[in-house]
Amino acid sequence: MPMVIPGGEHRLIKIRKVNRKRLLRYAIFCSFIATVVGMISSMTDNWLYTQEVLKYFVLPNATIQNEEFGQTDVYWKNATLGPWHFCWVDPLTEYFCESVNYEHDDDPADVTSGVQQGVRKAFLFMITGVVLDVMGLISCLICNHRSNTYATLFICTVLHILAGIANFACIIVYMSAVSKEVVGNKIFPASEMDEPLFHYQYGYSFIMLKVSFLLTEVAALFSVVVFMAKRDERTFHRFKIRSILSSALSPRKTNDGMLSPNARISPVHSSTQSTLPPTPSTEEEEEEE
Image 1 (tube, helix red, strand yellow):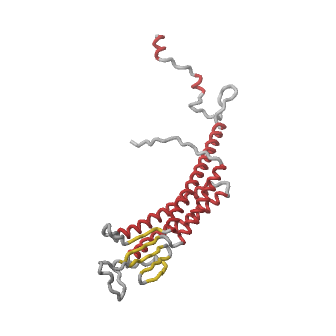
Image 2 (cartoon, one colour; image 1 turned 180 degrees about the horizontal axis):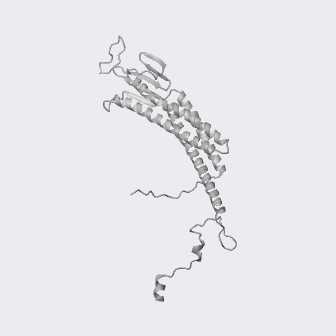
Image 3 (cartoon, helix red, strand yellow; image 1 turned 45 degrees about the vertical axis):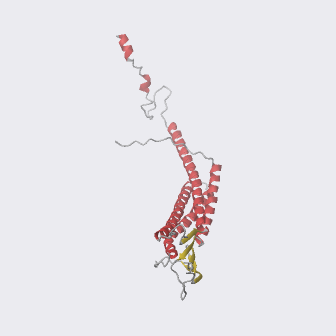
């Protein structure tokens, strides 16, 4: 037996044209800020700051010092990770930057290099999100300057939703790649008295990507509301036109009470039903007998 899904009454979203224009301008403003912030985030390299303890590092031609209290010198490797450049400084290297190579995967020498190789897969979603943000902003501007904006408004809504999905995927993939490298290499303190061997902190570029994601979703919300109001308005006008046409083409009676030959006879408006006398009930039949 097929399952019957209960349906509810659909209420039309009634928004005046002035308010729809206002909501569309809000969507344009949020889309513009999201596009600018997303482009700045994608062009800068301050996505992640790392600080790693080089536990087994020894300077060349150096002896171990401070052994009288069981302490040795601790060396650190500080790095800044981004989509285009990888910069670091260690005891043997001053501040140095190199371009990120997306073609080759080398064996990482330390955890910092492993994190840098692991987060590269997220930047494809970053570029996709920026491109969709730009296309969504252009479609919103076109909607603002056109009178018939139903199809363009639908495209604008879809582009903003897809841009939000791409930015969200970039955030999730990036954070999961960092956590995988850190947890996979067991970079945690051996006891509560020890300090962790790896510190990391997200930079302002990554935070700007989150802000761009939120603004893109707000722009998508405004455009969805405007699109649904426009769709319900078109539905209401279509239903109104159909009701007017059906009332105009309904059968009309002539002056002598007969139907015109070209009119259609419907079972609801049939003249035979109005001329037949009412049938007596069962109680009346028993009284007559």
